[in-house]
Length: 370
Image (cartoon, rainbow, N blue to C red):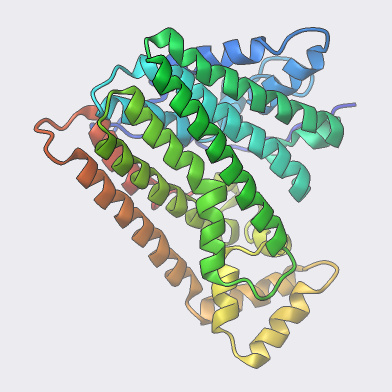
């Protein structure tokens, strides 16, 4: 019996354009058909595979019925990575349509990692609905993730149908696999950090550069190459993507403690209850006195962190100004992103809508609430 998915009201993150609009119309018009084709290719003797994929991507509910427009919007997630692929392709002077297979590949790979991550973390909900493992069990969720992993690779090779040179497609495919290994390395580090009290902030930043930022870097770099960018521009846009990905994850860490449920789909301070070793907690461990450290250790070794424990941790975070410190790291990451973007676009006489959208993206994600 499928678990009934849970949904709450939340807005999708708009990826801004120069004039303050968004590129959701590009995602709907160019990305969705590629994703639909990739998922349809999974069909065969095991229709559950397609059902699970469509559910995770937000297209269907747990019973297989089409999701409402609101549910689909919430369950699809931010789609930052495909949006970056399209934007960087256009910023390099290419037609966004050429990047559609690339955009689908990074979105499918990202969703593969989410399905497996949810199993490993025992996360009950993802994007305002029950996770795949909670609906169909661990074994079938692993199958769903594996299928999206393979579908991502097949999607990438469809670049050849968009007049992308074979050598470029093969280069991107090799880089895609190296990036995937980097993500897995990051996940190994993340799991290894659990329960440890000696993880330094620098070690954590190394982990998120692999687990979170590697795919954002790839999306920006590969999008630029598909758009015809020279090597230097593509590298700078890749650096832009990496800095953006780091800032994106640190902002997520802030929201995991100080975010509102209506925006994030999670309870406030959920990361404290789940004992997640995110940047705010690591910085707090570096700042506390011996007496405070003992109190913190006592809270984190309890069978369950109750509201009084959560409140005590929040008080310590406030006492040591941790939220301000973390916000400073977000700002620093996004300043690096802005600098790399400026270098990438240097010498271009006309500010394109895509370039303006990339600039605005830095500003929006540094203050996003969900």
